[in-house]
Length: 195
Image (cartoon, rainbow, N blue to C red; front, side):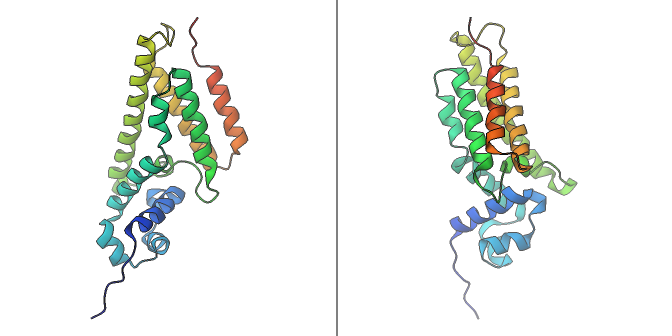
């Protein structure tokens, strides 16, 4: 009887994260995932369970390792600084890696079959959670007088998320960092200011 080959589960998770980031959930085959992780399919199943569970673990890892700029942004003193920090860091992340541009959450769910519906729902919930955090931060900014009375925190949060998501799609399509930074600057020109 042969011994199971030992492998580094953390490195394997990083590898499959990059595959999902590049190809999306449904575009990533088990052959892609096992090749990236450097292990056979049974070992991948043993370490992570099924493909959906593997994707969910990769998504958690992505939020922890790559979206760590969001909690930092939420602590900045003004709503505009929050928006600017998120926009410019999103541009940097979406263009950082030539072989997996864009955003894992957006790339993972732009299209999907009925079988992938649980993954699509998990991504919707993750984005809704991020939008709620932004809305709450902008509500605080409004209460502190950092935003004009006419500003709507819910709309500002939705607007910021729409711009960030749009930039992720454009990054995946090959838009340059410079172009996306110009998009971020344009979005910030529309940011409501106190009078």
